[in-house]
Amino acid sequence: MIHLASNSESRALLLHKFGIDFIQKSPDYDEEQITTAIAKDFVYIASKGKMEAAVKEFGLEMPLLCADSVIMAADGSILRKAKDVDDARRILKIQSGRAISIISSLHFRTKELLLVDTSATHYHFAEFEDEDMEAYLESGLWKGKAGACMVEGFCKKYIKSVEGYESTAMGLQVEVLLPWLKGLN
Image (cartoon, rainbow, N blue to C red; front, side):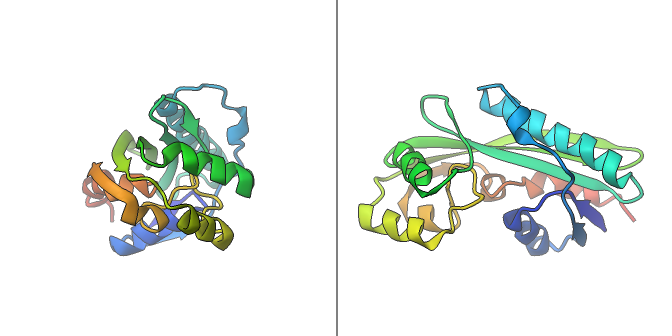
């Protein structure tokens, strides 16, 4: 059993899919304090900060897992969670017909071990159809998603090519974590 220190539904679904037993409760951590404009640095700092907050709040009696993800646009800019529907539309238009990288960082900690990994999955999308994008925006499914992107949902039919794990794109590179979980009781 591990403690997923994240409120992410996608991360919880991934752990269920891979048969990992967990409880889920997020620590109090404010990502808005992070000032870097470099995507891989941002997710590393956020994941590390969440881990530090989780250790203080929950201790290490149960192994802790923290993660963070962002989308890096083709120009290198970070596409974070949309603030509202207009911001989500703007962010999706940046991705439409272009290449993006979804970068995820995880911190997994027990009393004896600290695993840190930052991985990326790269996508090239076809142009999003306006009608389809508006229906997605109206659904609200983009809320809480890095870059308002759901590669397992709305964006899936627009994927022209992919390099990397889908789990990384969903916010948690479970394939990297699995070997480290085998040694746990």
